[in-house]
Image 1: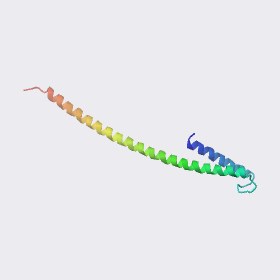
Image 2 (image 1 turned 90 degrees about the vertical axis):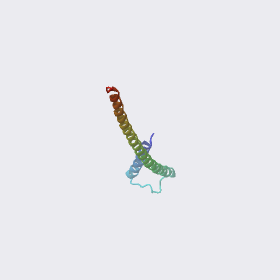
Image 3 (image 1 turned 180 degrees about the horizontal axis):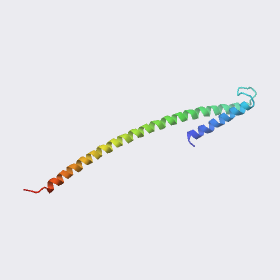
Image 4 (image 1 turned 120 degrees about the horizontal axis):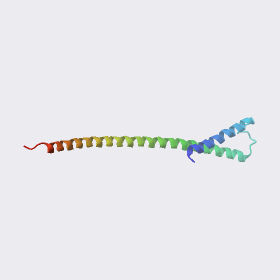
Length: 106
């Protein structure tokens, strides 16, 4: 499962839990929550933060590699254009040589 899907699941759980609390007009800071629920919610908040960080890191790495790929493609295109130009020059030189060979000798 990729980072965005995991983050989406965590975010959905977080939103649903907040909605659940709001339906009972309670906040998470209400003191009559069992410690187990408070602990789970804190773990969920921690996971949410980790996934947000991972998502940002993932996006940054993807952008970095996309830029690197663009640079490589540009470099390869430049090399290819240079080689095509050299090929045209060689073909023209070859044609000149053929023409000279076909000229009548005196």
